[in-house]
Image 1 (cartoon, rainbow, N blue to C red):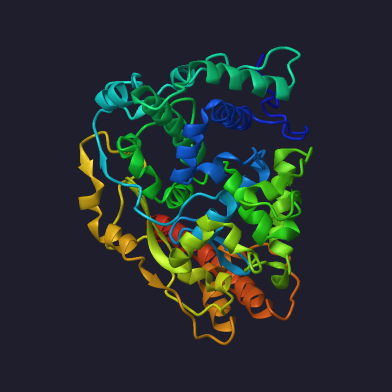
Image 2: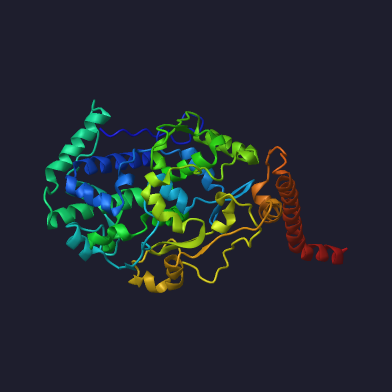
Length: 471
């Protein structure tokens, strides 16, 4: 039977076991690894040529729910960046390609979204969509088509026995020779990988918006799937192992990960989650306390210095896209990567820049719009942003000789939001930023209180005038 350990409702002080969503995520990774093992050699060779090999050879990493929750609470929707006492931080395209091995160079993952995917799913996958106007296909039907309909653990079955059984089940139904059947198998597998691991569709159904890009299997490897992952991450900030490993590298003082397999690439497999048995609420509180007190010098801005890029061809291909302000694309999810906010990741001092706001000349559709209300050609609708990607945008530079001016501007803009309640020691690098932040936090609290007083006066003013006239 499938293991599910869910804490009792409202029992916040008990140790936290794996959540149902976490177990499903880990189960999904195991199923995909088992199917990958059951594919014939020529299919795995095709996946290698498409650039998915390094990613598919990764081992699962348990999700650190507390760390993800703490990071989500520091995320600013205006500038698409984390707000910390030491300034902005953003997962970048370099982080994605080094951690996951997914390609971040090439064509943007975009195209046309349709009101119905029924015809394409039936023709290319031999399956049915969840509804007539839907971009979702049932996960169980997709798994069954790949030979793993019975994906639950059996009583007394070890993990090794479980994986071996699933692999044999997959091998028994997958086409052994090239042809239409093999192409259909590969599309089914790729939709499962993209929908559950790369773009992480919530719940059981699997998104198939990317299916049109899989019709010509010879072109699948030309797309920047890692950049699409980053766009999806910025849009959802879900419980993702990519967020976790990013924090392990840039914020080692958190102590949430344990290093393993040093020197292994992609870097996701260099870590394992250090399990914490304290309650989720307690863990999140402790992480926030650490984030408020990490010395500025302990933030690791350039963790990849010294990496052997020659052993990582996926990294070498991505170099022209590193260190740039650029628009990220994943169909209707079109989000700016503001690398100019984190030039310290390039070993430079942070210059003062105009902080992004919601008031932009172009606004993407809201979350409720997923391209099924009408046929939408995103290569036309977001042509300017797509041109930006295709031209690799522009490289960010900095002529600043120190970070002090940036600290002042950052504290003035985010002081009340970031430094409220901080217990950061006043070390030399952070002294100006901390003092300014605390000062402006106090000013903001005073202004908020004055606003409440003014509102009360406006409400009570007619009553006071009436009482005075009666007297």
